[in-house]
Image 1 (tube, rainbow, N blue to C red):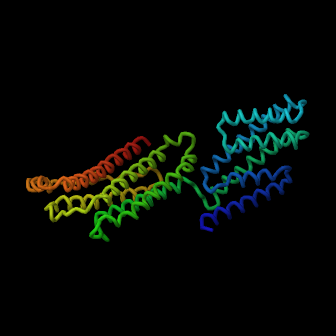
Image 2: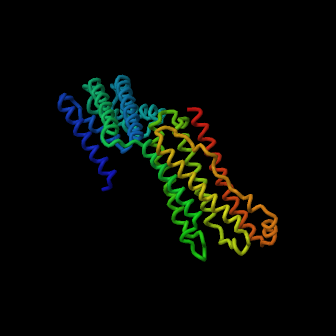
Image 3: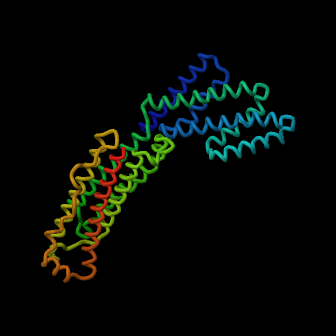
Length: 351
């Protein structure tokens, strides 16, 4: 079992034991519903637990209303007629509220109340609601107090790790180390694949973090900052992949070393800039500040000479395409850095 899995299991066991202790201390009837609530909503992160707890509590409340109304309205009918009518009503209400997990809880509430607790319906409903709410509250408290596992923290740390990895890959592309003769950029492929996997994994985890930000999560500054870094990393990864796919360039033979040096210098500066983003994100708990200096620019002034233009005219079509594609990828990187930092500053100003 991994460290995270062991931590979650120990937290769950401790929470269930505490809840059981409370129920036995107060000698409460149906106290086992609290333990059931803890077991059903504890899924490792605060946001997902909050959503499951909300659905379970709403489903329980809706089921309670339906079983009371249905029992009064159709209690004199045969159970094979009355109970399906009550379940149909529960399904309609739960569907209109768009409950997923809460839907099954709602239907289970109707069935149990109708078949097992019809003689003590009101008392059972009150205790069921109280103990369910208590179990959900204890599950949420355990995630706050025992080895806190908040998706927002994980999302922020994941973004820092992704930015660091993107910056290091840009450094590798600039240095060109471990290059082979048959394809100078082939060694970048495993790094770019790992970046893709990290980006997709981070996106999968984001839903839990958004749940922690509340009902207007998409407009929250932190969510917008996450989306901003996500888009920037995605574009930089795509541009790195474009560079990797380019065929080898004979800069020396084409007498275009100036373009090569300008590109390598820009990649190094871009790598430093992305690592600065990671450092800024790690320092401040809030939105943090973008770097004060202007983002790096692709310096081609030294390469824009008459001699370079003449050499470019002498290149074959495929060679010229190689040079232009290389410069376009670097230009897109520059645009990504500039636009991302501009949006970052706007977020800071609106905070």
